[in-house]
Length: 361
Image (cartoon, rainbow, N blue to C red; front, top):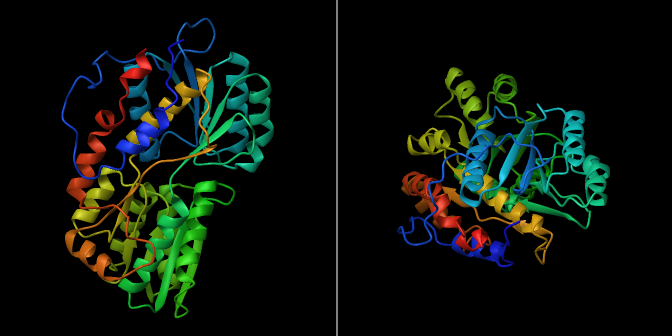
């Protein structure tokens, strides 16, 4: 098993602070090794094997995340097995149990219900397998959570929205589902931000992270609330579907749309003025980064903190960046602001940003 250096996470986070430009090619440029087999099992393999359970494999965020994770597999010579729970919690548990039986080196899961996963995460721990709950928190000693600053980011989105619509009116929040840490934190952050604006009413609905559900939900909300001024979605793929509902209703100029994830189509929507803003998390970067963390855990290294944060960036057109800077929202002095073009460049160069040659030693 290849040795993984203890400062991996600090290195990845430090380079993530450099916003808006891609590093030049140097001796740290990742090798072009060809595609690693991502369908192997943990049985009989000399390589580190990571088993990943996603909510589904159709959401564009997860599609991009798989691509990034497979790039990490190429660069570091590990094997990654991707499985989809198809949005079903029982499936998620079953898939984790299968990985435990196979004896993989690390299990990563994007939880549908963080608390509900605790028994099976404990089972993995008892089997000596470290786990990563990506965007989910489970209180087990050998489990680590990889997250964004979701609550604070969405608090900022809410305040930005409130000021952009004149601090009065009605807004809608479309969240994922209850019990998912990401959805819960983004939901909490939105309400925390809106608490300062008593003349704004918030209506909300779940979407189960599903674009068709999001589109239908938006259609119903628009019909029931003709005075709706803004919609925020906690998932980029859902936001793109919601925009179609807004467009069909002829409300493009009336409803301000904000998003979260920053996939390529979202960045285009911001650039074209269809979305007011999004938050760049970088799905490919997220996939790559999580596999790096998994390699660290598989090698027996343990980060000092069980919650590991990854950097994010607010993406807006230049006029909205200027307006944001004039809004004087609390605790935004160090927020990274990127134009869509800057965000696209940053997202495309995630591999150069994160690649660590010491992982090959």
